[in-house]
Figure (cartoon, each protein chain N blue to C red):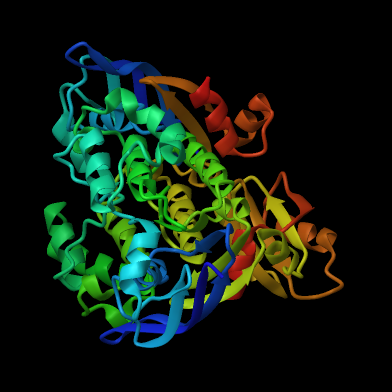
Length: 242
Length: 300
């Protein structure tokens, strides 16, 4: 992890009518950091993330993502980030190879580059045997890993993951975290939104949102010490219940 | 027995969803079915609630056979499916009234059973169910599943997608329901919820890996687990996997859970090895197994 900042947020606020969904949040994320963005249902994390990925305009405040301003250069942000939703978003009716080619094309990669990437990716994931099979027929764990790799196809500076390992079996889930560590080690920043507290334990630092505000931000270790509890679940319960 | 399952198998075309499943749930027990998506949890629930017929084996619920006496079972069980299945266009109160009427009862008759839960959503009783938050939907669904005072309650992943605060409240509610002599079979993909059950079955790929109390399952894990930490997680994992005689290497939050296959394993040697990989701030400490460690060992 380096000290280069890839996300800089200052006083970011989003209002819907009288309701303040995101209330004056400020934080920074480093290059190569695994950053956990936590909060209860309705705490404002989805709204905050939508602003960061350039699909929702903030009401006020400042934010720079991958070097681009969220107000002025939202389109550039989209080109420089990857996104993986908790809901599987590849095409079930396309094969593994076709999905890779399709998303490579969407991201504007040259044909030759897509071919190279495709081969490397299939080999790394051990999907050689099923490369020409429809994605819909794969087990959930493989789909999730493929989906993560696809979100990294265009070598984004930051990848946003929304509850990446919910429901996945414990062994596959760990293979998934190994992939995340590898990406982070290569300098990709990983921004994980989740309310699974055991996912939070894997992050370098986590922030916890309560009612639109960031109420805590530190390493899991320090947060556990600060609240004198054994795990992130209890940190969360203490904060969210007040 | 409140639930008795013998050699149940169910296939969908080529996929074997359940393979030779057998276990019993005692009256008043809070029994957990713990496993990832696709393990077969929902299929088993559907067989037990008479919505699906198994290919092989038999089962009884509240003393009734799931095939021959399916009508009696439907009167005696409550079922909360994993997917929110109430009427989105009806209000909170209308949904509850509807389910009470279907079962030939009234909200008043069994109000004591749902009171504690219902008072939390009562302020929103005129709101349409589709407009409720996740936590409130879940409370309403539980009320609807309880309104006819079932003997056995089936809860299919009630806490999936629910935040930790609502999850905690939900489990507190289950504990209180159990005191009212309702047998509960609950499924979850969260290993940490296993500890809250009286007994659990670990399930993966349609097969039961183990059935016991959570304490006993953890005790059955025989290997010594070490919590290992260093300055670079990625390098640490790769180095541990290279180390001779490693048995398992699993990232576990800020640590890696490491086990070694030799009985004379010395952590000091491992430390020297990790240092040779230019890792620093190395920490190796003994730790105890969790349900998740056991699950992975059995599924390996």
